[in-house]
Structures are given as structure tokens and as C-alpha cells.
Image (tube, rainbow, N blue to C red):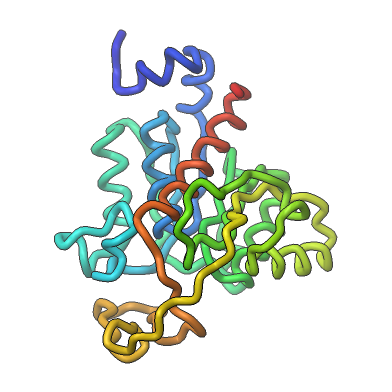
Length: 252
């Protein structure tokens, strides 16, 4: 019988689609990368999706985040993302976690419940905690390295963290993971050298913050607010979703 996933089933087969329907994937970070990852997972038939993010949609998110529109500014990203997933697949189960994942709340989540974990967050401390917990639970994880300040979406690669180069975030992660005894980690990263954002205070979040009321972590606390585009983080998110889907089903 035809359904919304029939075209995918033509490539993967029914057994793989049944496997996806019974899978539970956790995505940490529903921004420029994570929002596209979640959408692709939903459109591929993943049955249970856990989404983690404490942020609200900001006007400055509209240029790159799937859930960001004029109508959604000020709303929690996880709520908008859940609504989109259920419009795609009403049978899906979407578990919303309106929180910023960190070592302080890591004990609240049982990683053994997940089939796969996606790291689409940009804080090193949180990324390291997430990776360590996933490894300890024996759950596959894929981590996204830096996607900001870049313009070439064709430069992304899927490799082990210790085979990365150029990306400053990957360099930090290699050092920290090596110190923690992590021997391997699948990542998506770009070989494109990061560009330096234009210093224009008239469009700087540092001097013109428009974060929605109630925002927990405002952009003004960042060391640098990166430039971004619609066509770079989205590609990273779709690549991640593809890796998750192929790994879960075993179809290459």
C-alpha cells in the first residue's frame, strides 16, 4: 500500500523501513544543522525521535534554521520541530526535551534507550559529555564539527575525528577526546577554512541583541557570533541524517 515513505522503500526495502519505524534517534541541538537532520529522519520513517534544545526561535535564525519563520519567532524550537514532524508522520513519537544538555543534567537521560545519537550542538563541554555518555552506553553517535563562517557546502566529509584537519573545533575535539581515551568518533566536518566575520556593529548581535524574551543563553555571551548561510549547515544536517539512516538499516 502506498504511503508517505513509499519512494524511500523502493530503495531500502520493507524490512529496512520496518527497522526505521522501530528505531529511536536522539538529536541534540535543533539549529541550522539539527533541524534539517530531524526533518530528514522524520521523512525517512524513523518512528521515535527525541529532540533536545532550550532555545527559542530568533529573527536571526531565519537565514538557516528549518523551523525559523516570522510566525515562529519567540517560540521554543523543540515545540515547532515536534509539530513539523507530526505533520509529516502523525504516527511518529516525538519526545521533547526543552533543555540545554550539559554535564549537570546528563544523569537525567538513559542513553541505552536510543538506537542512535546525533550531536548537533556547538559547546565543547556539552559535546564531550554527550560523546562520553554515548560511548559508555554503547550507542552509535555522529558528531558535527564547525559549520559556521563557511560558504562551500561541497567541502563536507564523513570521517573519523582523528582524520580531520583545518577545522578549529575538530582540533579541540581531537585533543580532548584523546585525553579521555576515546579511540574513534564518526564526524561530519568541512575542509573549508573558516572565514572571519565582517566587523560591522550595526548588524552585530553584541550591540543589537534581539533574542526573544526569556532566552536562557543569549548570543551576547559568546566569544564570537559566527556568520552563517542557508546552504552550509543544512547540508551538514542532511549528510548526518543520511549516515544515521544507512547505519541503522545497514543499506549502503
